[in-house]
Image 1 (tube, helix red, strand yellow):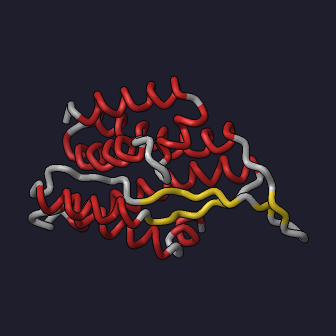
Image 2: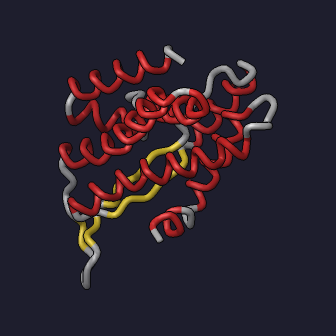
Length: 185
């Protein structure tokens, strides 16, 4: 049920398709594999965001970042698929409580940071597990470490900017982990 509701988001589907093409570029023979991996990874990451957003009483929606999408495509083509910039969108927290009366609620920096960190931590966990398992799981590792690393860039609307505003030391901790992991493929 959660997956079906999640896949109704048009922008999420576009992001998954574009990233699957970028990760399988230039041969595209791995496109079906990366499509499956990214559906799985995006679903878990988004579920993590949603879990904490609901806990705080918010709704959440994925939105494509047009500049990030353009940068990802250009870098992918110019580098022959070597650089897989995966920071093409972010989850947007909707500051409304949904009940009989819709009303705006102030979102604290702590809540924003925790919600943003949930998705990054999910991708890092999936990457570490895949790295430990190795072998055929290397593609899961690659997709998730790229999702975590590039989304940690402290550029709005990416999650890194939200985590950095919340706790600089925690952002630095996550960034160092992802930086180390991205270079041990």
